[in-house]
Amino acid sequence: MNINQVNSGIQKNRGKKRIGRGTGSGHGKTSGRGHKGQGSRAGFSMHPLFEGGQMPLARRVPKRGFNNKAFAEKVVAINVGDLEPLFENGAEITPSVLVDRKIVKKTFDQIKILGNGELTKKLNVGAHLFSVTARQKIEAVGGTANLLPAKKAVVKNKMGWKDKERDARSKADGAKSGTGKSGK
Image (cartoon, rainbow, N blue to C red; front, side, top):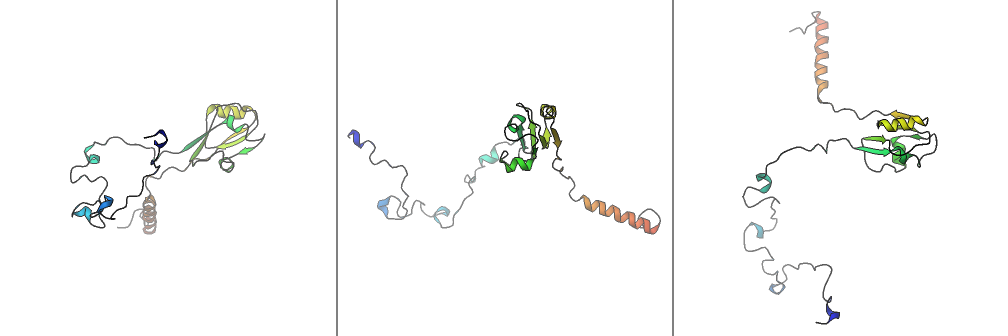
């Protein structure tokens, strides 16, 4: 071999596996499916965790714990030092303004203003949460820190309206009969 032939024949991507093109191709006759059985038939599919009837690994391994990340609220943090160069004196800052100016790019449930950095401009900031230092720095230069209402809490009894409706009906029945109780 010569030094100029070291890289000859090397290809970046492997060629497509040409199935069923005769025995000379190496994938002829049964086309890599073996002889007879379920796997040789058209339409065959198998669950990716199936291990031939053996107890699968996913069921052999004990499971413990719980991760609440999927249910946790997504809070975006912004420092007062980041707001300083982006807004002029006396500007009104709200979550919609931050999204429009592409300062906040990801989805969020709440925005929290943190006190890192210096603030010299008077800003009217509206956010869901403020750190103590952020509130102090905003109010020290004459700005305002307006708390926005948080997302509504999760209702535990989603069908609670049925209970209220039933109670209202029983009170109405009691008022009609004059006894104060349902007339049964």
